Length: 228
Image (tube, rainbow, N blue to C red; front, side):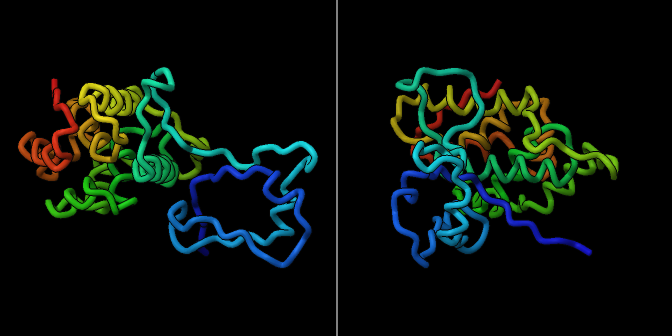
């Protein structure tokens, strides 16, 4: 029998927010934008039980506020958009569902489409590139994992996927724009990795350099294309 699993990005909550308050019957409503679905309500009593030491406020959940990239100084490092962070988390989850040992460029691409609300995702769907097509091409290209293989909780990035994220940051820095790094940067980063599974899948489904330039133009010129 299949089981339903609720997956969400972790949220940072300090125990100081509730350890010094008197118990009541209220609930803590976490933002729906952080989850796949409706709001998750955690009762006050259950949330309080998560704290190890109320007299010493500590972080219970870890915030996923950035993605694994090369080290940059905090002043130099642009921020990732919420959609980019969600798409990364969903792509990582999809790699686990497929029981792959790593999070590759194909997983980053699927994450963009699963998140679904970004301009990059809408552009892909408008051009006939859907999640189910990408997933099917992924299985055709990479195959299926063994039935009894279990992926790690956070499948490590492949070298190509790591270069995609680094490309997104570096391209954003080249633009000189102070905005966030978006899913469009990730999409174009995938396209820049010519030998990657993500690039091959996009190409198979009709994506090309002209479409990449069209995507870049939709960013109001804040993406400096440099495909090699």
